Image 1: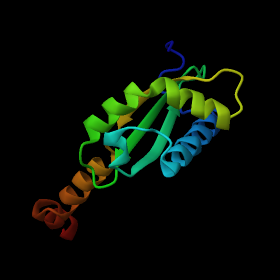
Image 2: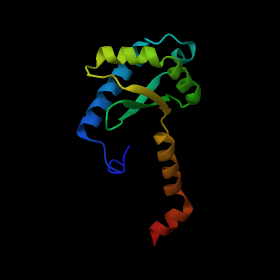
Image 3: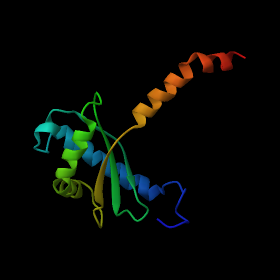
Image 4: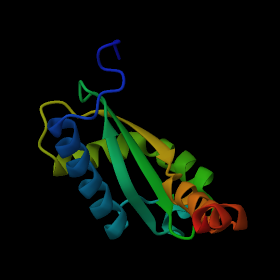
Length: 129
């Protein structure tokens, strides 16, 4: 990423490709197409897929429902990265299929923390003034 691209919002193209890949993963996980003992125990959600500006790398944010074993789930998704890339390529028509990187989605935890802070007595006191 060069200096001009830092801090820029994603382009419409990045957003569209990310959304196509997100839908492909939702379909793969819904159908249970990955044969893995750990992954089959969890219902996975994919809240977001972020694309690099050149569309060569897709960062797939995943979270098991309930939040348990998130790191283990990501490790097992990494084991099946090649298979998953092929399955996504079959569903999404792109000139080049991006490399996949899996990460645990922490946005739910962040929003929970913000809710706790807003509900704290110190903030409530400041809001009453």
